[in-house]
Image 1: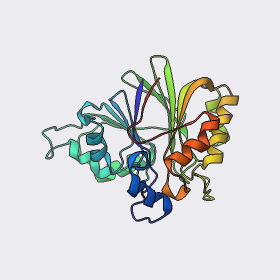
Image 2 (image 1 turned 60 degrees about the horizontal axis):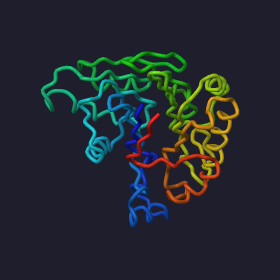
Image 3 (image 1 turned 90 degrees about the vertical axis):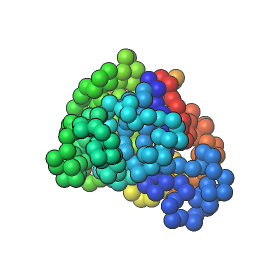
Image 4 (image 1 turned 30 degrees about the vertical axis):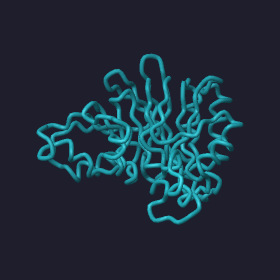
Length: 268
């Protein structure tokens, strides 16, 4: 599988939209890998994960054609992942299509948002639940429960194709015992995991900082879910974590963890 990280930023991106902190100032001045748009990914050019506000810019920047998408999978309802207004541009009158050309997979909260916004629009919308696998073309997708929004079944995603498997774990938080037990029984070729809070813990259990991110990775390594050759890459970095891209690289290098960046491609 070929996984493209279209965005690797937290809720307001890096530099922060209205922020004047040190990381944001550095990103504005230096650009490069320190510019992070809101988190999203694309698998094999056809399976889209999340729909952030920068979607139009991301696909142009990376030469991606959204007309190739066959499925759109949402992880949860926060607006940096679920910019629901973008869906309309795939249908008439913006284009000639009279049916949405891709299937949408969404938890109960996102499902309700889309149904409320587009009650009569012609689309295939499928509700998903943690620990219940489903098929989409050549992919098997298994949502697992993330600890992120109280009362919402937020999802991390295990994606399988042709004997290869990765976990996309953005907005992860500290996993529940049920999720930990489930992941401990799964073999992963790659892990893409959030490190939203960087060097500065926020006190919010719904995100990881550098220390808790490393702990989550080591947990899966000790369980045998991650092999010595399994790739581990970070995403969903916030400027408020106090870490530039180079700072994160130095901190994660001893742990065998790569720091993700916008446009990064993983092959597994």
